[in-house]
Figure 1 (cartoon, rainbow, N blue to C red):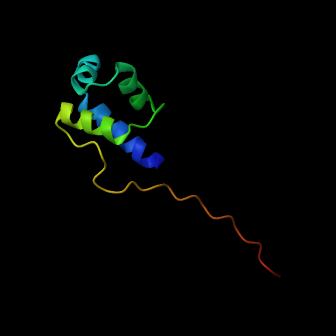
Figure 2: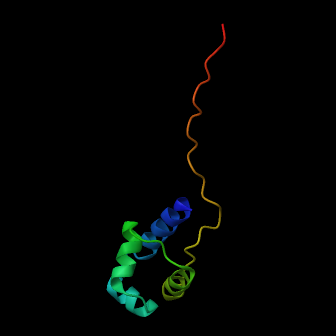
Length: 81
C-alpha cells in the first residue's frame, strides 16, 4: 500500500506544478495542511480526498498500473558439504 501512496504523492506534486497549493486545497474543499501532509508523505489520502483533488486538478492521481515494489534479496541458504 505504501507504493500507492508514494505514486499518488508524486502524481499530485506534478499536477500542482505552477499552481498555488493553497488555492488548489480551497478549490478541492480540503485543508491546506492536508494537501501538504499528503505531499510530504505524512498521511495517505482517503478516497473522498483523492476524488476531490482529482476533480479540482482535472487529473487522475490513482496509479493506472499497480506499483512495483523493489524485491529484497533472499537470504542465502547455507550449502551442505
